[in-house]
Image 1 (tube, rainbow, N blue to C red):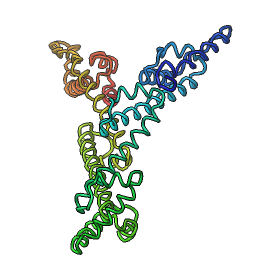
Image 2: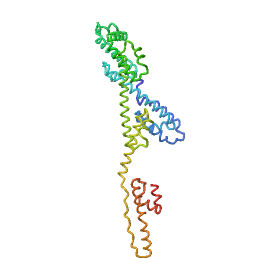
Image 3: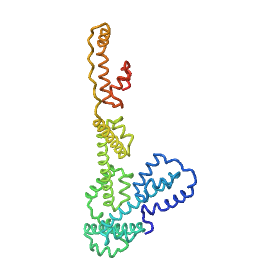
Image 4: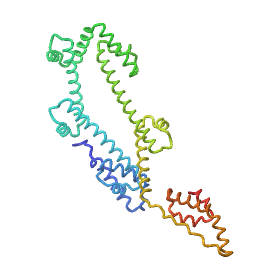
Length: 355
């Protein structure tokens, strides 16, 4: 099964080369651990590619050559993605062509030759599509021979048969039908902007106007789907911007991320998740206990008279302390309100400014 992409086969050479390099450099002074960003990327790629060795094992083998390891893992990821795309297309074509064997049976039979299998299935699909179109045209033009008879007579020349039937159908159309079809083509050209004028396309598809109409209708459907999908993404972005109270407006972010709306949605969802975690942490942290104010002692002497004078000035200080307690509860600076009030005694304004 040469050519089949697996995590083991893709990293076999990597492991061997890395092991040899490790043995060769065993007597050298070990280098410091990989940069945290590099380690994070390696861990991510190992998880995505399902590599046969752990990230720690690979980092140890490739110590000092982390970029080479990252490059190899990226190549493995690209091969796996390509292989996955081919397998998906094979399964789709097997279903569409009603192949005599299942996708799994064909993939097993063509292991390592998936491109060859894909080519066969594509040809089969093209031939079936032409046969279906010929059969439909034979019925529409009321041809003197059946579709089976014509296909047998034009075996290997199906394109020629298709062209002749399309011309026959075009001739059978009345002038009003032609005018209506031309108007529809012109309308679709105006709405889809295919890059050529309606006149140029009609000249290029002379005798094959139905094919042109079908292509333009397909293009219009695809553009409508893209437009609908983008509108849904824009709505989601506007909602997330409002929920997260983002520092920029939805319009500014949409302009910056034009064509990269999925990336913007991912970033906003991450911001929303972080805000929700922070909010949950605040709720779980109990508020600092408030200390009841100490009542002033009775002013019964000269010394007590001085204390009474201090108490008369305390309402402003008590108001500042109340503000400090409120700020400490909402900001969670790491110390209690009482500790900060004691540390900033006489400097309450500076403490409030800092909080």
